[in-house]
Image (cartoon, rainbow, N blue to C red; front, side, top):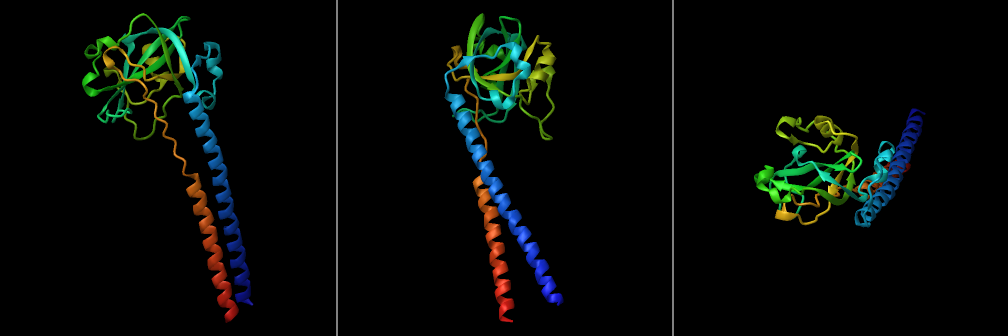
Length: 242
């Protein structure tokens, strides 16, 4: 009697576990469809023709998923005296594997608002603006690039060093607060890879590195569910032969 009860309890536990594993597999398939849609949306935004930067009145209502990687154009004046360097262990472009910095410069728009523009990458040897004077564009300029959300920090992110002009994330709120920028945008712009006088900084720093492992996760869960069925089948077959 006890053996039969234990068999029923074991069977119910196995059934519940099987249902959980299968549901996790289908959940990962749903995540796969979502991720593929997201990647397709990002790809279309990156290669779309640039549109006008959203007006300042809309900035407080912007939703990250709605603007991330949107290709835009903005016109203003660079404030090179407020340039900051965001450290990178390696350059994002082909042939630039050495440590260096993203050059982030405030762009003052005609209405006085500011947008931080990641103008490009420079190696350690060119961190001083005096070594690349030709690239410090003066006067009214038009910039095309991709809207980017603030970079998150984690437990391994070093503290910023504003006194040295060195930062470790592109956080427009923190950088704007340090310089006292008027009406700063809550996003940044990654400038397109347009050749600049002198060749530096080198634009086109955007790297889309979004992992998509949901199919392998789904196959893992379904595989575990199938294994469980196999083990259960062996146990029942052996008990039948007893």
